[in-house]
Length: 153
Length: 184
Image (cartoon, rainbow over all chains, first blue to last red; front, side, top):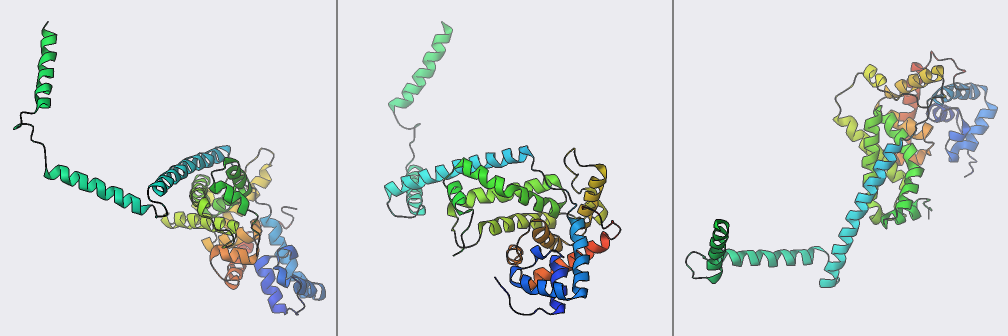
């Protein structure tokens, strides 16, 4: 982006105070105008030079190195997250096969309701094993007796 | 329309492509870690913050809509917010203790003088208010443009310039005793 407007000394000062003395760091839209001020004004040059001295000092900070353990942790997280997506997608495709085009919550609610109704019916009509002459109850009793008898032999 | 250099990789990550995840990590992890370390002045906590940010990326990649925001901007904003969350949860540290936990200089080749210098700069950065520190980290060290940095911080460009100017003034005062030849 080229800038043909003139820049005031005041704006140049603010620019240098914020972005430093290196023109490469100045906002692209104002760079040309700022360079014109820099080349034509000794006070501006002195201000930019002072800012550049701080830039150089800040540049002496050490670079960050990424520990291998961190990259391993992040990739392990990725593997866990992608397993979860796959499961979610599988459930979604299953739901779509049962109830095409519906959002996932609709078949989930239908299944939940069916389950709740089933549990409700079971609770309201319980099987009373004590009072019935149910064959399975007798069978269970016989099995236990048979086991004891076996151990006695 | 702006072309996002990460869009394709993010789409592949969303499809569960591990190679794309590794490549995206390689591209952004060093800068994200540098940002988090400088914000938190603690290597372990910085790594945890970056891990939280990546976890958010892994879980949101499939829903990423290209064209809404630049991916890198979103990722740095997430990282920065994770750092701000951690800073808010922290009991207030005295400046001296923040300096004490500044990252050690890595690499055997670095000589002692440079390591000490680096620590001084880290300490001066750690002593800045968090938003000034973030602004300088983004604009000076990560070389973000002013519009992108303002977007990451969720502020106007004018507010960003104010943060940068105040931060640089404080750094200049704090590093005044260092010789000007430093780093050349």
